[in-house]
Length: 118
Image (cartoon, rainbow, N blue to C red):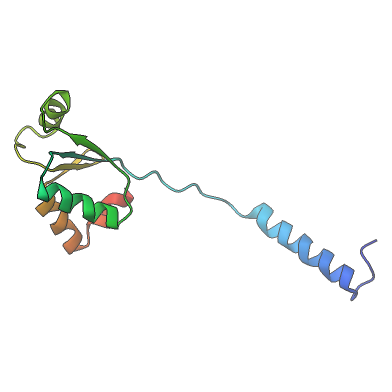
């Protein structure tokens, strides 16, 4: 059926049996969910472009809220960061990063990847 020991058929069977055994016992861990990144921006803001470019370079998914015309998203930003009056305002999960300069400083210090990993 599987050939005699030493035959090609027997070696193939032995290989696939060992392969199945390894993969059956291997634990698969789901990757941890990355924290949601939210950025509040305005039209024509160079600092907003700079911050988004940094995040895009790291292939980070983020939610962007344009608050050029004010509205409920501007109020949401102020609720999350009461002292914030400028854009961009960046949040990684519940952590308020601040603006573009603070994001760049985190990157320069090597702490941004740690924050983005969760």
